[in-house]
Amino acid sequence: MTSEKIRVLVAKPGLDGHDRGAKVVASALRDRGMEVIYTGLHQTPESIVEAAIQEDVDAVGLSILSGAHMTLFPKIAELLRSRGAENVVLTGGGIIPKEDVESLRTLGFARLFGPGSTTDEIAEYIESEVGRRRAAANH
Amino acid sequence: MDSLVERFRSGDRRALARLITRAENRSPGFAETLDAIYGSTGRGFRIGVTGPPGAGKSTIVDGLAAAFRAAGDSVAVLAIDPTSPFTGGALLGDRIRMRCTEDDSNIFVRSMATRGSLGGLARATVDAADLLDAFGYKQIMIETVGVGQAEHDVMTASDVVLVILYPGGGDSVQAMKAGLMEIADIFVVNKSDHPAADRLVDDIEQMLELRARRDAWRPPVVQCVATERRGIAELVLRIENYKSAREAAGDLAARRRERREAQVRRAIEEELALLLFEKSGFQDYITRELDRRRPPYAIAAEVVNLIKNSLKHAI
Image (cartoon, rainbow over all chains, first blue to last red):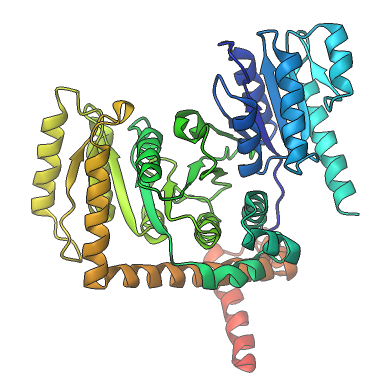
């Protein structure tokens, strides 16, 4: 009767008002059997991290189209670490230039999903990363 | 596990969140943890919020949370959304409407998926509420999926039930009236800036005239416009009135006892189901007998008889 669902927080940090992409990804993850918490628009890094803690999620997916990713993404990664939640899989997508993707890789975002990514790729990445971290935590 | 309980006791919200997950997953040891914190429960007040989809449940909860915070109380919310029976996934969107949580870490919001439970709540709802209660949250709101067929669940899970309705709800409201009459301790007519709101209030009042409750409480009808937080102060007052009236009558204690009885029964059912259908060979037996064209009730009766006989030896 024990069942471990994958719980994911999908969040929109910052000021842009376009959440079609976030909703498409949230629905796709739900259809893969995950429990997806969607926060809505205009979230601060603090509120996103607090939500991730309270909801005890396995992964956080950030969607951003405003160009502020180099400010907001590292801030969220740092806050998660400071709360002892570095085990949470951190990923995201939106309009992010290649060189920024490279810098973010060293800041806790092993993979980001830009235009052209499929929802299956995103779902498979989250499933395998969460699976890997859960297995590591059990040893 | 024990260090998690220690961290929980020292006020670590992450430990609280983890323990809720364990209860949801029925992880090994979850029952012992819940028993370990049981002695600290009973201080929080549990407010069930139900009503048809689109009535404004989350917005009312948001308004109440802000009012409770302003009065200095800590607030927790359990927001329940349905799990898809096809994929097992769920989209939990109640946080979107809870704006007051944004810069206030004294409000703890947890979204829960029903995971196959049918009564409008998740299986672990009472367990999660117990954890929040033991953690020290004073006002604990439980927001149901919507109105289902088995509203009895929210009644046993809460100390007071708010039923949120809205004008223009039409037939859906009509159809729900019977079930709602028994469970509502307070009616809220939300979106009361709508011209048909007074009419709905009259309808509810009339129904209250016709229907006898099992206790002496007459549910008040409160009008709100939750998006503007109008009527929330009155609603808070009504909740307080209810609490003191029911405490004085001894009904609150009776209701809480009922909740614990239901919890014990459910725990026994869960364990027995596990024992019967997963750990023993009954499932295979049932499949085999059905393949032999034996009718279902005969198979069930035989299984029950087998259990009865083995119980005789045990007790």
